[in-house]
Image 1: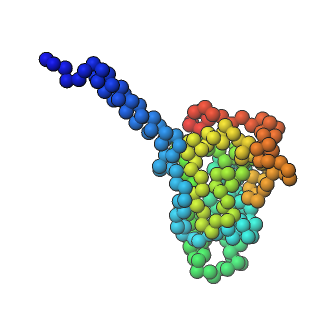
Image 2: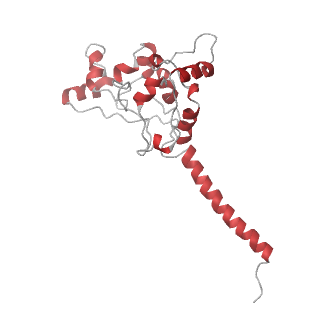
Image 3: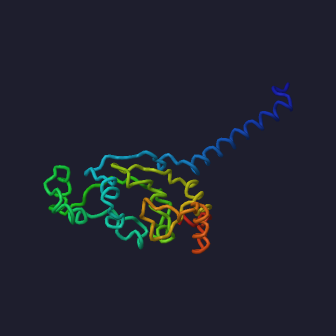
Length: 217
């Protein structure tokens, strides 16, 4: 029976099939590594039950992140503030505002306000807020300039590649730990972020893990 393909053509066909398979696998791996679609939500800004403006509270009024997100310095999660935190001020400030009706209903009923979560990492990823804050990674690194956001927007990809880039070069994000929640912080006069970050990195002996077990537990 005569051959359909010459040995040379057959060899190139086999190489093409293997190359196409490897390209597909590497392409899928690249999507997972850099931009998993279900978690890379840059620009995501869901409507909230209460039009809370971080630009007003954290920006113009200068309210500390720690007032609402209590325990972020000790806890692995940044807690959503309970209704009591809102009412500490709004029992006296704009107590009859129609925009705050869901807050008053929650206060009277005891049911939590159904805030919509904006930032999320996959369930198979372990992220500890306290560790990062204690090392001097500012809120702005992951969440962007929240103090300028009337509506909170998902600012960074939070993909595996994005996190690993920071673990490999933490100096780009480091600042004194007591300035972690300060959105207007800048390195000392005459110092670049890189040089000052490298100094902080060596002082605190910061060596972020790059192995899988560092985040996948």
